[in-house]
Each structure stands twice: as C-alpha cells, then as structure tokens.
Amino acid sequence: MASPSGATQPAVNVPAAQAARRTRPRRRGRTRGDVPGAMLLIAPLAIFMAVFFITPIVSLMTRAVWDPVVAVAFPQTARALAGWHDGTPPPEAFAAVARDILAADQAGTLGEAASRLNQDRSGMRALMLRTRRHLDDLSTDGKPLATPQDAQRELVAADERWSEAGTWSDLASALRPLTAAYLLRAVDRRRAADGGIVALPQEEGAYVPILARTFWISLVVTAIVVALGYPLTYWLAQLPERRQRRVLMAVLIPFWTSILVRIAAWMVVLPREGLVNRIGMSMHLFDSPLTLLYNRTGVIISMVHILIPFMVLPLFAVMRGIPPTYQRAAISLGSHPFGAFWRVYVPQTAPGVAAGALLVFISALGYYIAPALLGGAGDQMLSYYIAYFTNTSINWGLAAALSVLLLVATALLFAVYRLLAAWRPGAAKEA
Picture 1: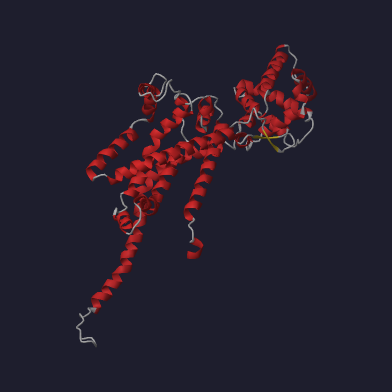
Picture 2: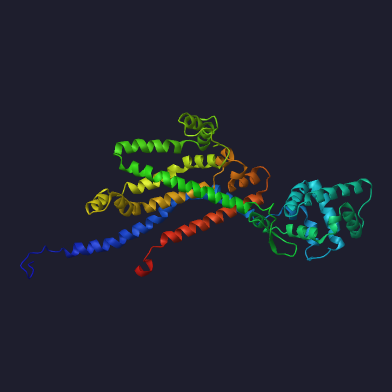
C-alpha cells in the first residue's frame, strides 16, 4: 500500500495481530497463576522461620507483660483479695496467705514466687521465708490456725510487715498475671502505692543510662566504620578487576572468621605487653604502654574490625555501578578534581553509605561478646544485661522487658531513618 507521500508501507496481517492481542491476557493470567507455585516454594522456609525464629521471640516478649508465677503459687490469696482495694485486708486473706505459703512450700513454688515478689518490694522474699518458718514452728508445736483471726495474729507475730497496707498492695498487684512491672523497671520506673508511676531512686535506676550508652557506642563505631570504609571501598572500586577480587577476598576472610576467634586475637594484640604497644614504643610514638584492653577503647576497636565488612560490601555494590566518565566530564567542564568528586561522585554513593551505616549501627546495638570480653564494668551494653537476666539470675520477665526496650528504640530509630530517607528538598513541589 502506498502512503500519500508515495512511500510504500508493509502490509499488516490483521488476523495475526488479533491473535497476538488475544494471547497477551492469557500470558498475564499464567503469570498471576504462578504466584501460588512461588508461595509453595517458599513455604518450607516460612514455616521454619515461624516455628524456630518468630515463635520463640514472641514467646519471650510476652514474658515482659505476663507473669503468672505468684498467681499459681497463691491461688487462695488471689480469691480472698479479689474485692480488696486498700487498707487492712479481711482476716480471711491472712488465712488464705498462710495456707498458700504452706502449700507452695510443699509444691516447690514458694521460692520462685518469693523472688518475683522481691523484685517489686525489697525484703518480700525474706518476709515469705520467715513466715514459712514461723508457720512450720506452729505446726511442730501442734498449734493449728483454727480461725482467720488466729492466722492474722500469727502472721503479724511472724513479721510486722503483714500489718502494712503496702505489703498487701504489692502482693495483690503481683497476683495479677498481666503486669507492667517489668516494663516500668526497664525504663527505671515503678508503680507507687497510690497507683501512680514514679522514678526509681538514682542508685536503683540503671537501664535507661545503659540504653543511652549502647546507642552512643554504636554511633561511635558506625562513624568510625564509615570514615574507614568509604576510602577503602573507593580505592577498591578503582582497582582492576583481578586486583579487586584479591582485595575483596582479603576483606571477606575476616568476615567469615568466627567472632570469638577475632576477639581472642585482639586480646593478644591489645594488652600492655601486646603487639600494638610494642610497635608503638619501638617507633617512639609513645613513651609508656597504652591501656587498650578492658576499657571502651578495646571494645570500639574490636567492633570496628568486625563490622567494617558490613560497610564495604553494600558500598562497593553501589560504587562499582558508577561510571568513571561522570567525574572526567565534570573535570573537563572546568571543575576541580575534588569538587567533581564531592559534587558528582559522593551524592551517587549516598544510598550505599546509608544502607551500610544502618546495617552497622543496628548490628552494633545487639553486640554482647566484644563488650563482655574486652570491656570493663562501665562498657557493657544492654545485650549483656539481657543475657545476664536470662542465663544467670533467671529473671526472664526483666530480660524480655529489656529486649522490648531495645527493639522499640531500634524500631523508632529505623522509622526516623525512613522518614529522613523519604524526605528530599523540593519533594513538596514535585507532589
């Protein structure tokens, strides 16, 4: 067919074009139909993650707000105090406590319940054990508690604190399985006798300063890793491909080495008689050995060494995709080489820097081994205390509350990062 301008256009096969259009929806339908198949492929991994990763974490987190230890050990007391609010409880409550103490002692749950009560009010464990001994003496002497009034009299005789409303208030609060005591303790707060929330005394409140210390150490480590990792990655990206592989392998070998092995190596290198001090003194860089171990300096050095691959790898992935012709073009247009680097190259690496810095910072927040082995008493991070309450003192409620505190603080920080990453100058004009 000839066009008005005289050019010949190819003939269009109308049935073939219609057939091609009819096949497109079916092709899209087959693509959508492949989604269930993809879900079946990842189902084993999803089930594994849910059973062995998500479920244990959620179970631990619930310990921060759910603690039925006292309610299980003192069921009769829970029923006797169901309608009590303030003042001296009725004599039936004294009798219920006496029966529960004896029954819990026989069942082996009194010690755990007393330890839980002692977390809310110091001395509650001693009160429970002293009362149990007094009740045992009464049973030995053949003096049963015939009436609730007898129970009230004997409990007050065992310890005067049974006549105080604060003791009963703490007991009634601990009898409720749903509790905020652990979360309040994690932020250095407690519930007062009148129901209000007050700050703990300065000598008792420690976890908020520890959280601040954790964030500060992580921020310092992240800043040093960025300062060291950026020039290293830039140099790596400029190398020929064969040398790139060798240098990248040198970066990855420590990454594949066990963290415990690397920390043990720093314990050999950093002491006053170690390699660093020997080299420094032989080169007359300092006159006396430096104290680099069992303080914050050693913790930061080891964490920087462990975490620097987390900065190099994402940044290298970004840098190797930036054509070098951009900088050469800026220089050819009259820009200074440093100006071309700062204004043309650096902004293109910002996503890699942000991703690497966020990865390093979040990883540093949860570090436990490096501060525990290389730091002093004032250098321990929040994860150290989570491990302590989990494994040593067996206070899973407080360990879970500290875990929730760290998780929430990290999530808020990540939310701020997302907001800053989404904000761009002129974004409102574009919208």
